Image (cartoon, rainbow, N blue to C red; front, side, top):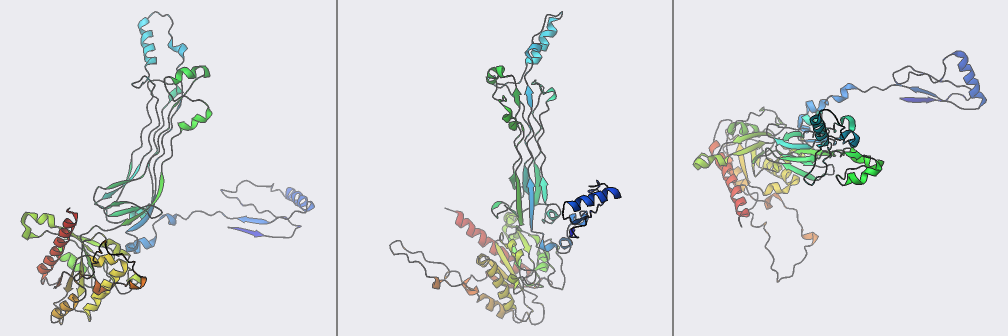
Length: 500
């Protein structure tokens, strides 16, 4: 912090502070010297100000993860911004040509030793066309992001959000003389960053670079710099002869730039996690989604009698259909239990609706409705409306409605009426399809007044409505049959769309 104090023009005052930054006095500290300095300042009619400097040290607690990440991990587990930098290329070398005077041997007593020395000195690396091969610097390390099936969240990237690969090795030019012992610089290893399966990699401007939806998928996000080349230094009268052997001859001082390795790429990336699941469980808080997931899979989510127990999506593996025989293993599916939705979630109420991005990969939705509440149909419509406001395409997917807690008093008695009322919400999908117009008829542009917002009744009906009690194990098999039937219908429609 710097504060300025403006005293009178006839007074000059300089405060000195001994610190690790300000340890050298600007003026002599003796009283006689200060009086002479003040008189000189007054004679020249200068105006001075007092500057008080304070040393600001970095707070080590800022490097620690924020407390909000520890207390509220559900807000940060699926989105983060990181910075990656690839390694720079290694430097080449400025080499001198071997002195010809040393290569010509004089008469000696042992002619064999002279021949071996001459052969060793002249054995330089050459290409197939006879040109010299000069060493170059090592390639900088690349940065690769890959999908790791053992990773679950992106929370660890909030603690460390900058990754740098190593630079390439330089050419080891001892003596700076071209010889056969010179080697290229070592290439730096690739920096591999593991992320959860289903991570989407976007650039700083929002462009999608990669979708790592399968285990082992990888994407090169930053490329390492190329290594510098080596140049030969030789006298002017020998350059023409040497250029017949190699093009890496230094012509002037500006060519020294080629010796330096190129810098590696640097990028700022946004990582967004979208859970990879076949079936998504949606509903209001305390509807029984986590209990259902624990009943039909081996997952162990947190279960309690208060709302918003589930803060992050839980995954579970549903076994195959045993009626298919050997094909039961190909009918397995992954279920995702999402946090509860409430009315006004699109306005930020409750946990919001940002976690609904995890439904983008699902093929089937399962609406879990508490049949023991005062108005279960209204609860069902609330969740459907929140899905419509987030992404209307979610309502086009096949789905199953599960009326849970039918073992409670009053729920089983109105099960039939609730089923009929839910089935009346929606249509069979025929009315929503547009008939293609013939080419002979003129095509009219639609007016803006004809465009109407689609309501819940304009979207398809549920494939089935099943009343169950997950806690007591009532009608669980019927619910599984409905979910597997929806998965088969989805796979059949995909195969028909792919077929020519």
